[in-house]
Image 1: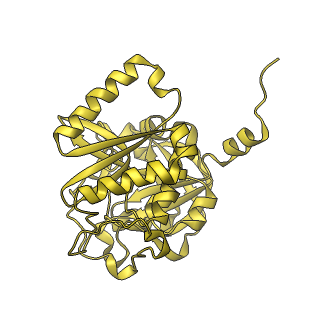
Image 2 (image 1 turned 45 degrees about the vertical axis):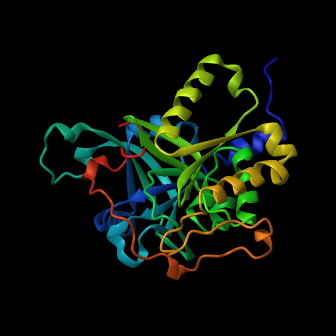
Amino acid sequence: MTNQPNKRQAKAQSLRGEVLVAVVPRLLDLSYAREQHWYRIPEEHVEKRLKDRFPPQWLALYQTKAFGAEAFGINYYARVENISLVTRRELFPNEPQDEKAERRYYKLALAPLERLPRPILSRRFRRIVFIPTTMEKFQNAVEINDLYDESPLEDKLWAAMKRLGISAERQDYVRVNEKDYALDFAIYCAQGNIDVETDGDRWHLDADKSRADNRRDNDLETYGWRTLRFSSAQIREELETYCVETVRENINQLGGVQEPDKFMPRKIHPDAAKGIYQPSIFDYQNPQTEIEIDDDEIWKYAVGD
């Protein structure tokens, strides 16, 4: 007899793939979604980056610096009505029929775009490729970091750090020694940076993973990153008293959080939860310079390509 998922597992599985946040790097790409009602994803990147979070029921569009006042945020979303596998030749019949013409894409047919009542903004004007998330998180998100749906442990720690006003970037990527490392939480401070990791109970029972973590932590430390690791038990039982307090103390030792467009770094007071600083839309100016990316390279700049 096969094991049947319990109600909680079944509910979690039903939510996976609900909403996909995807990058829109050019005005032309938005026009395809708005006027022709489609978005494309290279076939190989679905398996590499999305796996069991595909296909989505909804698509949300994250706009880059090309969009001026709408840049570095999600302003539009649409229901996915159909998905088909097509070649580039079929998508762009007027393009030169070169070696790229047979490249395969998932073509997401969209309902008319809907505008969010307020944008979901990125505090640090970050570059993303995909964020699979749930409709509940999408409807309640204030900023990009609220959307991530990697694990309940991360969600719990994120909520606690937000209550204390700790600015962090979730699922951020750092490149050191020609390697790309994914950080659960990246905190940028005046005198260094902090990598906060939530380690599941079984993770370090694997000796190979433990050795990889050792090399990873050493690489990051060499380039100015402190790594803090918290176990499942610590997050469940000592969330405020140990985990968040340790993060707070390290932030203050490193001179405070360095936030975009803030002249002075900000140290975190133990009672900060009583009066958390809330950034306004006027804080989102002077975005960082982005690297210009070729049309067919927009899905590649997250990790390891």
